[in-house]
Amino acid sequence: MSKLEDVIKAFTGDFNCAQSIFGSYCIKYGLDKDTALKVATGFGGGMGRSQRTCGAVTGSYMVLGLKYGMGEKINIDAKDKTYQYINEFSNRFKKQFGSLICKELLGCDINTDEGKEYYDQNNFFENKCFQYVKKAAKILDELLE
Image (tube, rainbow, N blue to C red):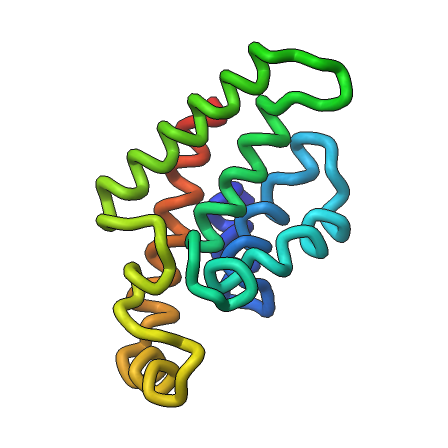
């Protein structure tokens, strides 16, 4: 199964956007899946449903950090490389969708009854969020090559 298929299976299951991305790539970069899913839980819905940075984006940032990031051993080049990949990812995602912010991407406030109803009536899970998660995984695959 490809990483994209893993991501889609996770997202159409019980996992949020950030968990679907981070949990699908973590093992390849040395982190067990259960820990990755726990870490990513709070990033769903734009960070705890606060609708800030999209969870598909933050999940991708965490994957890029796992592959390219700086650990306990100080390595400024690794940190700089990670920042470059984060910026490249952000630019590609924003070019495709116009924003990195969940609330702007959805065009509604999912923390209100009206916003939840609008989200559900317009099938935004499939029509929007699913597309963001798929595109994030595709961009990520290109940056991880």
